[in-house]
Image (cartoon, rainbow, N blue to C red):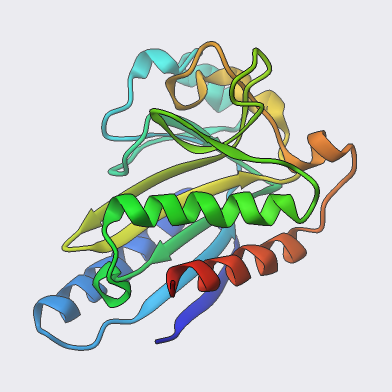
Length: 220
């Protein structure tokens, strides 16, 4: 069973969201009609944008929308899980649109495997990632005062069809996270591969590694 890799390049969040919804609805309709469903793994980057999930708190947005506009940062309320997060240049965003029934897994296990995909990818660069109890995503030094998040995850599913996904900070400008309480946390930091390794990272190489580990993990 093939999962098609797609790269949308740099794309406005609103455009990517509409394209996601179109593919998601088409996949959902095919499944309900008992027709074959296509599985896609979409990569992209976004211009500066802050998104708030369906359970997110506006209080985790630390500045008024005018300040965001002045900084050319868009704001969207979206239908994924999770709280508030930032997307921007230098960050790899992944939108797998999958029928989880094809892989005989549920949503919780799917999120676990997305986390594992990221953990295995950053390990290739000598970065040790881990999970934090009660919080999705991938963290470094999770049990210390230096706990910091390198990847966020927020997913929506219907009839086991997924959309939205993950964001891995590769060469991201972390200053933009100061506009928010990332994922609702006030006592933990954020980081990037570039910051941890003190050098720019080849984004295409990271995408290749992510997709390799994804295909390994999804077919367990």
